[in-house]
Image 1 (tube, rainbow, N blue to C red):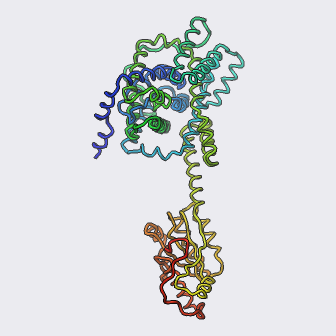
Image 2 (tube, rainbow, N blue to C red; image 1 turned 180 degrees about the vertical axis):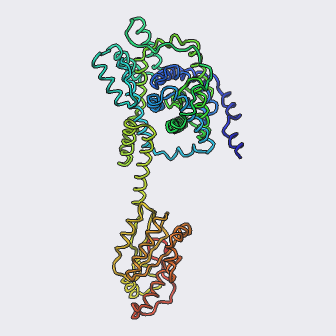
Image 3 (cartoon, rainbow, N blue to C red; image 1 turned 45 degrees about the vertical axis):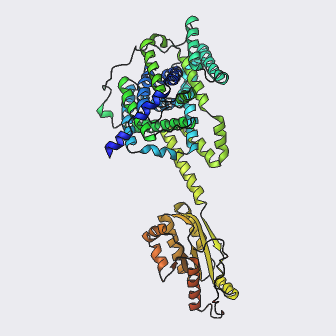
Length: 571
């Protein structure tokens, strides 16, 4: 069974067949994605604190492995802004080498999640949480670029708001308008160019232009610096067994983010195409293997990249060959063009990432989400603020908890306790009038669980002075132990007041929970639980006759039953 599970997650013949369909189109798409990915890989490597070479190594190694073993034909993986946000505090607290260990641990966790079929649970993340998460990430990425955009050294610290404030203070003391101008020009060129010619990779155009201007005009801007010509040899020297325990929490955060962002990106790729559908568990496996391998070559943890995946789809990619080509082109650049890449100004890369952060914000989606319901707006705003103020994992947890609480509140409001008229069948008008004086019937609609049960008890406990209460339960959609206990409590309180409680229409699925708390036995006492409402009404009538309340009522009809005039089935 385990072997079959592992085999189902590995590459198969259909993947190879897909690659052979239109290789020329995939090669062109891969080249385009590589041009777009180069400045992003460099920028995210620098932002993470491990240098541009770490970003390139991640794009090459993780990009290739995720393309082969991932669950999407169109996904492009590599270093991302969201992951950078998580890595910065890890570097600040534990040092650069800890990032490699965390990446390796996170990769193993992702592989385990894939084997446990955890990918399917992505569908339970609410849209407001995802939108708020994306908005918060865009804000953090933008703030992280402020030091390089202002041309100042990055202040110490891992809180992005504090670091940004200190960077602004340094700039005020010694302004570097050259860096600001260079970064601003890159941002304007990218944003304006995207509107004018969306298919042109203006990020690489802007970076090349900024580099040429900086070299020709001898501008005083800090470059990336020397890059190694090629990838380092695989190594495990960064592992420190004694520190693994302290790095467990950061590793969980990295694994959670890699899973979340990769599955979001794969789902977005499916939505942009026709006939494509990713395998979430296989995608987790691909990301796991990518994150196990990338640290061995000096790379940072990777995820599926929404921006690069979107470019891949829009340029006509149809198979994994495009993502593989993207990784191969970047590998050529690493080996052949390292001296040229090292001259790129950091301010230009900051401009690329600032423009990327701005483009991440979908104003239309945010407006639609904010207008949907007040709860959606609250969840979105809370998740975004938590992402800026805390960290990404806590932000998602807070968003999920609040979304769950608001959803429970909405569901609980659907539970109703309505008084309904008695069935007129088998009763004369006089008898029916007398029965209505002594019997009240309530229909319970919706879920009877912990979030709604106590309100139900308060309503039921306020029943007027009658002799019999009939609870019609055929419309109870779900019931938990709290609901069953509250129902039992209500029956006991009514019984102490001398009111007989009868129940009808209890569904088979609800009997177990009622029986587990003793409520079913209480309702069955003296035959107080019935299959249908007419049976309960006849039992109530018999009780009233025995008690002497219907002694003056004429004999009941024996003619055929009249049609049921109630608004629902009489269960």
